[in-house]
Image (cartoon, rainbow, N blue to C red; front, side, top):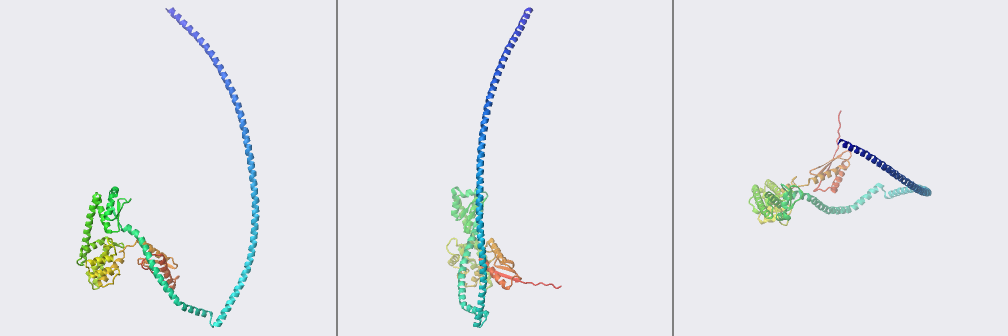
Length: 522
């Protein structure tokens, strides 16, 4: 058994050696083959590289020849361009030399002409001087001859001539003055109407924005949509029913109620406030609230009229008149509340009539009713004087009341103490400072313009506008302006104010000249 194993192992070992030798022989043969193939490929690559190198060398020679050709062409073109420019420069130099020669020749000719003219002018000046001297001698000779023949001197003759001319021209001057005065009167009336129209147009915009609108506050902007309503039916109903314009814009939490009629505007404002508080904004509810507010206002103005009549102690009065008195609270004239103005006139008229021995109660009654027609001007045609007289006649008011209504606007003569007191009280109430509205900016601008006009004149030290712009006091330097010149200065300032400033009434120009001499005793 052992001998078999040993025999098998020996056989296996011999077989392995034989296989190893065989594989080594085969591998050596393959390696030689691979080496030969690699050498063949290397030779092939080397030959291809030599071919490519030859081709590249040929191409580089071609490119070098082409570049040389382009360079030579560009060089020739540059030389040609340079020669062309040199020719242009030479030609321009030649033209400039010819132009310079021509201009120098012209200058020489003009210089020669100027010298000739200068000589002529000098000769003419000498001739003019000699002629002037001969003319003056002739004038002197003629004057001596005239003085000898007339028997008077030159100054005496001038005086006599001026007196004769003045006598002959006096009638013509008077005629011219009268014509100028008439023309000035007509032109002044036109100018006054123009100034009034301009002032009215400038005042209207600001008055409308400040005095003809009421502001209604909203808790939030969502209410604006509800006030407008679907397709605008709510706002249409409001404007149609109340007779006002309702303005809804981007102003936060607010809408505007606009109307010339204060009474309608007050009713519309109250109606909107109640609708906003109620929250139910629809056409039926709008009509209901408006009717309720209208009734309340009618009751309120009647009650207020009754209280005023009772407080003034003017006797019994028709309810229609008392209602119109209460309605005057919602009427304004020149920015002054009509009811406040009426009460002022009534009180002042009563006091003045009592002082003059008249009937104080009747004067107060006439003062209370003198502007009653203003409560009707929004509803009826005509001026407030005729409307007031008509309604007072209808209710059998006293003749003094009717006379006061007409007389306070100059349509009738004053027939009684009471009527005179009413007219005076009306003028006092209207003229009281602050009673009637004047735009502050316009007033300040006018005062400033008046002071600037006065200060711009030479010799003026200081200028002050006083009495609400109705007088300007000008203080001048006494060493520069004398008494006569101060009068002329006042006239000049007045004329300039008339030309440049628009103002009501008249403005007094007061020029003050003071000379102070101060000496100290030592």
